[in-house]
Length: 502
Ligand SMILES: *[C@@H]1O[C@H](CO)[C@@H](O)[C@H](O)[C@H]1NC(C)=O
Ligand SMILES: *[C@@H]1O[C@H](CO)[C@@H](O)[C@H](O)[C@H]1NC(C)=O
Ligand SMILES: *[C@@H]1O[C@H](CO)[C@@H](O)[C@H](O)[C@H]1NC(C)=O
Ligand SMILES: *[C@@H]1O[C@H](CO)[C@@H](O)[C@H](O)[C@H]1NC(C)=O
Ligand SMILES: *[C@@H]1O[C@H](CO)[C@@H](O)[C@H](O)[C@H]1NC(C)=O
Image (cartoon, protein in one colour):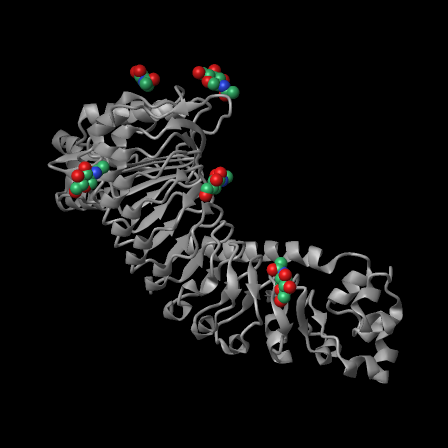
């Protein structure tokens, strides 16, 4: 009889009733059995909800039997030891008939009397910019023996610190605090929550250092502190989180080296450290993370050589974003061995040399960005390669890089890259007559202020806006598509990451 859901229990009761011939009896004992809920539990539920929803809401009038025949949206109950107890309370507009919050929602102490509560969530509840609320700093320990999941999502006017007493919720498996107004540091006591599998604090205003004690959370699968203002080092104890699948610390102010212990996270599939202040080069042990599918380190003053990691070892990699890291060295040939790799972002570094031709044979590759480096030489990829990747191939702003002039007439030349200057082309009379003088010399183009119809025709009706045309319009092609590509790349990664999480 334990843990029977509300609905199935109701059906069960009705069946018993029918088999009993109970319809005609009108037996008063039967009527009592339909709502076996302790009055204290029931009153606590009404009062707790009224605190959030407003005083107009009269629970005993509206829902006289909240676990039985007048179920409430957002409330679930379990039947234990002959009584109904509230085990789940979801406040906020999740469903059409959900409990929506008032302009001034408040935590009443009664909520902590619901001693069998396993799941408590607040969505879009504390939202008024004029009435700010803080979480009660006490009482939470009363839910310590039962609460498994606590969630606050999209409550921007819920401010102040994350209570230290959360550390007493020993049964907690999921603590999700997304997009609220929490400030202060991550409490050390979180390290007590040994059964925690998911810890998400993204989109708050938390500052301070990441506590070492997190290393005690060895059952953790997801750790997401993204979009806060955390600073200091990433503690080496992160290496103890050996079950971790996703680690997202992006958009903070973390600094120092990425600790070598991170290589212990053998099951990790996502590592996102973008937009921080990490330095000290690419940590070699990253290559030990054989399960990694998405590695996003972009926009950190990391420095060092891109060849510090043996990329060929990371056979599950699908997304690799190393843009804006201050990396030097040549684009490693070993990257071309990554058969699952779809997205490679290497923009805005100090990479030199040419691109390895092998990348054209990578089976999953659909986007490569190497804009804003110091690559040199001739891009000798086939026309097919450029056609396949289209604008997902970005190589602009590499002043010493060029593509074979023969590609120019195909309409598949890489955007923002100049054709190689060669004797052949400037001596080819047919090309000259088609394209006009300005296309045979990169410098002259920029002086040409407009595009006449003859040029359009030469480019097949300007189906694709060619970089030469952009520069002939008097705009800096590298400037334009530099920003454009970065935005596009960013959006692409965001979309992929987003779809991961949803
Ligand atoms: C709800 O209404 C009943 C009368 O229908 C009243 O006795 C009770 O005090 C009200 N409760 C609250 C919390 O307003
Ligand atoms: C803030 O809460 C008070 C009640 O404490 C209420 O009277 C007021 O309307 C609320 N302000 C806003 C802007 O909702
Ligand atoms: C973490 O675990 C160690 C040893 O198991 C213990 O000494 C320490 O107090 C724990 N820290 C926290 C915050 O739980
Ligand atoms: C980034 O870290 C360096 C030390 O490596 C420090 O000097 C600098 O102030 C930090 N920048 C920010 C924005 O925190
Ligand atoms: C780019 O490389 C060329 C030679 O290959 C060198 O002369 C130049 O200084 C480099 N530029 C930068 C910004 O590193």
